[in-house]
Length: 201
Image 1 (spheres, helix red, strand yellow):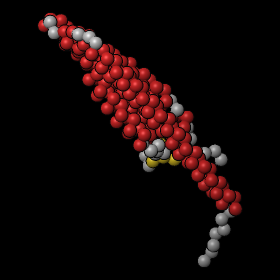
Image 2: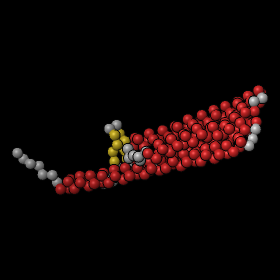
Image 3: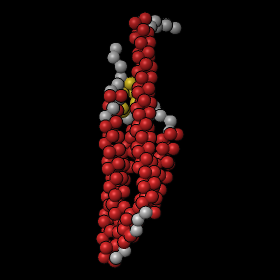
């Protein structure tokens, strides 16, 4: 039986390919992990901003409702109610971000990024609905002589406007963050079988 000798150049090239592929994969994984860490940090900051707004409105509403009557009292009361819910949402959002482990999987990174952007856009659409509802409630209160309804309506307009600005701002921040992905994946090629690493030889 005749044995075929493998040229040393081939073995050397093969070994270098493995080294380059391993190093490139490790660098890509680290970059994806850092990217997800930054996304999670942005989510935490957003939830802290929402929580700060909520606490401020709860305190302001509590003081204001005790010192006012009529429309103003209704306005402050709704600020308290609304931001009590906001504070719970911010707490859950921060808790989720705090417990999320930054991953290195390409598809999970894309899914998490796009998922957050979709949620923010959906919320922005709901915020417009809140503003419209506030306008309707305020107008309805005027027609029926219900001062509390007027105050509620004005509060919902304010809260909806803030949330719209908040969600749009967070969306733009997340979209800006997404521009980092092409830089991370410039050495990664995708095909029907999965992900491959490109490296110079």
